Length: 181
Image (tube, rainbow, N blue to C red; front, side, top):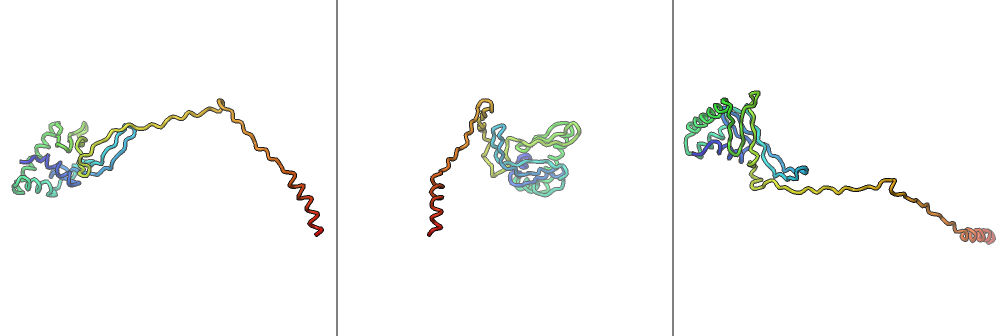
């Protein structure tokens, strides 16, 4: 007989929402690859999971999959999942945390809120199967030592333009001859 916890993680690989009837639902969101330059990490694409305690209605996905895998009737599958939910609630009410393998951990905080912490070591995105984080050494830009103004004195020379007087003298001599022709 397959465990319900394993089935939840298996369904989250293929679906974006898995509801445990009368308990809550796991909602998945695809996160693109990330480049963390500060820590020198390249993180593969993944699924980020959230737990919504207000998703209580049975959508039939978990119960029908459990019935199919274990070759039992739908009603028997439903009653076994109800027992599973009662067990989860009793553990949580006795201040224990509940760990769902490859999904995460559920517990109550000091204020009585149900808190979900996703398992960071298992990637639920099938298209990223086998990809892991890659560590690299970040290239730091070399420091540029700019010389101060006191260290170097810049000499600026303005170009001297020489006037060619010979051209103007020749033009002045030829100008009166232009009027006599």
